[in-house]
Length: 252
Image 1: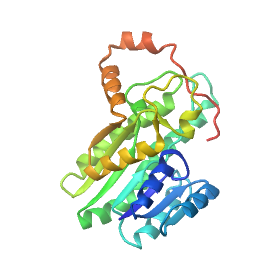
Image 2: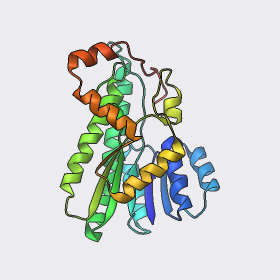
Image 3: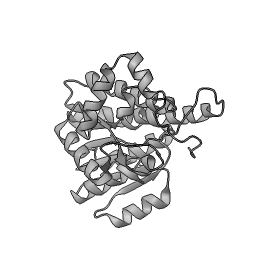
């Protein structure tokens, strides 16, 4: 099995890399932090390829994809790279964070999948798995950029799934709730049903193997998400106006 994975240097990405390496997969690992990638590569079994790049850089990602395809079309491509930061509408400086979040979370996902679609269609099989978030179900105060980006990825993945219907290529949308990673470690508000990253990776891999069209992990957050979606705007606004907010000013 060959797996191409972005955002592999920490959190969910690192946990997925360790999971698939333990299963004997050959990995193509993508991340911005070279030292972290090298350390992970040295600690997992098997021979793998590493690509140090930013998924917002389409040319670099295209080159990495073509290099990995040269060894065989991957069975699974996981667009996991993502960044998060609090943003406020009245802060002009937060527009930079807004742009970076969309470039990474949305454009980066599309640029991750694009180089592999044609080869997978010719072969008639494969999995394109996108890591979205329950944060994409409703907009939360102080997290407009992150919520909007994850809402966009959910819609993009749905479009791609229908586009590839009948091709043999499955598009899998995974919407995590709270997973214990460096990204959530900065949150100073309650995180219900917080799940360890290694357990999340195991559950993600099962959903990818099944070819699930849309999965929320942990499932309890799926129930919460559905209830929030049904909540009238007036009640939602009142309930979340004072909700905890993501820290601003993270290094993106």
